[in-house]
Each structure stands twice: as C-alpha cells, then as structure tokens.
Amino acid sequence: MPERPSIPIHPAGPDDEWHIAGIMVFAHPASLDHVRRTIDAMTGAEIHAVSDTGKLVVTVEAPTSHAIVAQLTCLHQLEGVISATLVYQHNEDAAAMYEELPDVSHAS
Image (cartoon, rainbow, N blue to C red; front, side):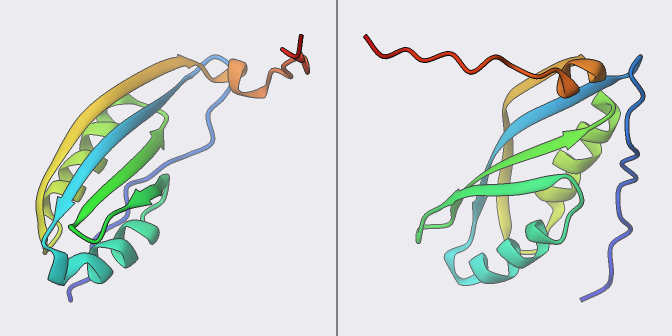
C-alpha cells in the first residue's frame, strides 16, 4: 500500500479556531480491518464505533475547515471505503478547548 501524506495538524493558538467533525464511514466488510488500521493511523482521527457490516463512526479534529475537508476526502478515497459522509461539524475558539468546566451534578 503506498504511503499517504499526513494532513498537517498544528497546535492551535488561543486566537485560532478548532474544528471537530463527525463522519459516518461505510466500508466493504472484507476491507474493514484495513480501513480501521488506516483511520487509526490518521492524525486527528478517532473511531468511536464499528459494526461487522462495515459502518464506522469517526470524529476528526483540525485547526481549519480546510483540514476537515482534506481529512473527509482522505477517508472517502481510502481503499475499501464505499462512502464517507459528514454528519456534524462544529468549531469554536481554540481557547475554549482549554477552559475548565465546573463539575456539576445533575442528581436530584
């Protein structure tokens, strides 16, 4: 398998944005192991769920929307992938990623 160039993801400064996207990946079941290994090797990508039928729930994080699109395109072009569909995308100031959230109990 030819090595794919990595998508550069640099630490974001406090004035930058940070983008998070949820992606549904459909892979041929026979290619599922290969697709999983490849996604696991991608910087900024994380697999959250996998089915035996080839469905994967993936999130990607990046400092720009262009990097998110590049990651989505890379996922779509992986050998064994039938489709990769953007389900959700969110961005906010990178500084918010470092804010400590209060520990609030919702118990009655």
